[in-house]
View 1 (tube, rainbow, N blue to C red):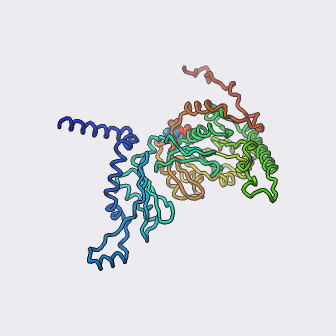
View 2: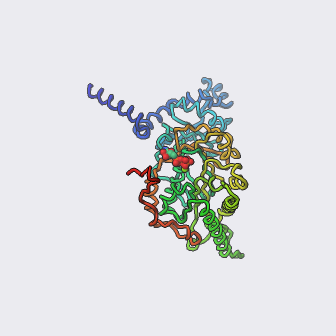
View 3: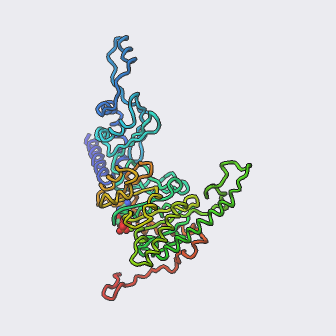
Length: 451
Ligand SMILES: Nc1ncnc2c1ncn2[C@@H]1O[C@H](COP(=O)(O)OP(=O)(O)OP(=O)(O)O)[C@@H](O)[C@H]1O
Ligand SMILES: [Mg+2]
């Protein structure tokens, strides 16, 4: 008996320790079973308490009266499936007549408290069927991406959503993206994750990093072209515009529409071209975009106008030529001058890290979803990397990218360095990897670099 008691105490202490230090392990070891039992046992009473039941139908009442049986109870949505996952439970419910998906969505907070889960979200799967995703612990506190993700060409698993699902950056569905956030909010780490995710794919990476290249130049071996100042950025963007024109010439040459060509085979973008002649897609990553739009003299103003024009042209026409923009900045509003709001309107994928004021959040979501604006302002300063990701459909999610260090990203880029394609138009901007500085140079005599 004493041994049994000791074993129970050891298990309870181990569970408590795991829950405190390693919530993900606790969930897999104990939480998933406890939560499944709790949900199944309490289901009917919780649904009733949360107002998610419907009174018995007339024919059931009539049947009970005829059979002289007690009045039937109200009925909760039927459970179609209960699926435990790595981070929580997924419940698929068949709604009763008279219920709608909004009823469930508005009761998610009540469900969360009643089932003792960390988070509850719901979405409509099809008419009459709703999926309720519950998380057992705060999955965004220490992000761990699942080992197996659904990878497809140009679709990067970049972050985790608060409901435990993977957030993908899908360039073919949403060609251009804008990432905003105050300083130290996690934009560059998000972008680094994107680079690490794109590195193994057949894609040319182009970087413009006006912070003297500190973020992107260490990853140079996987980049086909890099620019670290606005002058080079202008030349690079204009080279990209001419690359885009060449790709369109190629698509036109391949179209050859005749009566015999089936509709599905008429090429309208690079993905319709045969694989052997298909140009490699290009992802253009711009960090600190405001640097490209600021000017102090007449000369710089001319350069700025040309840069913005090239970016607008790439955003408007680039998609079919396989050119995708990924723009990061602290603010991206009309105060940066003409052309900015036009460019912003083309950037469909929006991500906002912590912002300090409503105006900045409005730059990302003002024209998409007012709820997302509020959510972006409420991100606490201490959880860096937490962001709101939305799209033009008005939907948004709370996401967080894993904390990929610069060292890990460099290792990934070096590993896939041989996949760096040569894009002829961008050849002059290919970083000379051997010449990258490796030794530390003292900034001044009075402040020598420490070893
Ligand atoms: N997803 C994350 N998980 C954990 N920590 C993070 C995450 N993202 C960022 N951080 C932390 O926040 C710090 C700042 O991140 P980052 O350099 O990406 O900010 P930023 O928004 O690019 O800032 P700036 O505008 O100054 O360039 C990182 O050094 C890292 O410690
Ligand atoms: Mg940064």
